[in-house]
Length: 448
Ligand code: PMP
Image (cartoon, rainbow, N blue to C red):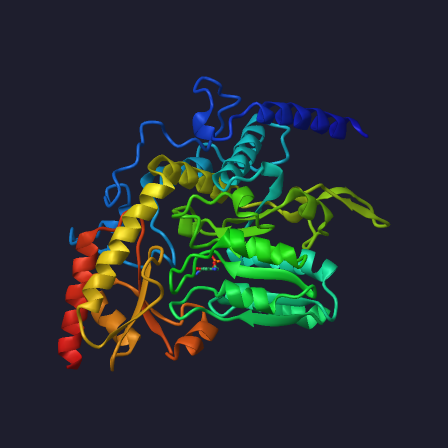
């Protein structure tokens, strides 16, 4: 080892020690410990506004002062000022690269990045060495397919998906199937749009190596009984992957209690930045997974003859990571946790109930999904294409999503080309629902 390497190692050891002393949440660290309180902590003064308030969300305040009724949070959530401030600081005054800690700023940024990993892992009940930062859920699922899947699946093996999956929990498995010869089965839904676990029980065989289900559907809002899905998968020796994109912003997710093996989600649906998300995987599974992308930061030692790799999770984070975004995501976790996911879920459940009631009161509206869907209401108006509805609602400053929601097989199952979808967040309120209903009535008059 040359002198430079020796210095680096010693600096890294110092950082590791300092990092080990950090609390799970940067916000919970001692305020006077500059060394131990790096960039990402959300300012203590910034308590969240109450549920249903838009005060923390500059994206919801229109320049004209007119309210903007944003009902597309399932696509991406608006960001609280606390997250924006944290990102601005990490990208500005605190900015430097990570994992090259020979100078103080970089060392502090490394602490911030690793504290963010600890924060995000804790948010879903996992350990930091089980959490890989990815660009989002899509990349997390592709990582599992191309690393774990390619290493473990053979011709004759089977994968079980469901009819309601997002394309990002379908296409990576199709690519893997083409690569390995593993076959894909599809679990049907119950009449009200839940993954039919009784059917899954009948389908599953010891040939199944993986079950990959959405924890919450992005179209129907149906919530999976994840514990039962895990027990079913494990009873035949399969692994369970949960696509947690729509679950993490509203359900108190605890990967240990759920019993899953992989958990994937995106930061931007959790009130955090785009370009960041995470894969959580059980430590013993992650330890055996081969790298899927090569480059800097994921290696132990490189020679032209032979390269050895860093342990997980670094082995899966090739290249300079999304440092600022990871720190922003940790701030988003802080924000959401301060409000509390049970409170957010209760708030959104009330809004879903009111919306479904109001829509049911209109004739010629078809409602999809179960009564207790989480934060999402999908519907169709007889004789009016969802795109037309979306366009007219936009004139009323109401933003909904209209389309197939990246779930074309589900549209086929529902027998529609597209649905209209109103989705809620912690800032949504009754005025948003009232504006939606007014806009739908106007659309019906126009088309009537
Ligand atoms: N799964 C579900 C259930 C989703 O709602 C989404 C985003 N619409 C994704 C996966 C993909 O997320 P991303 O595009 O952020 O990777």
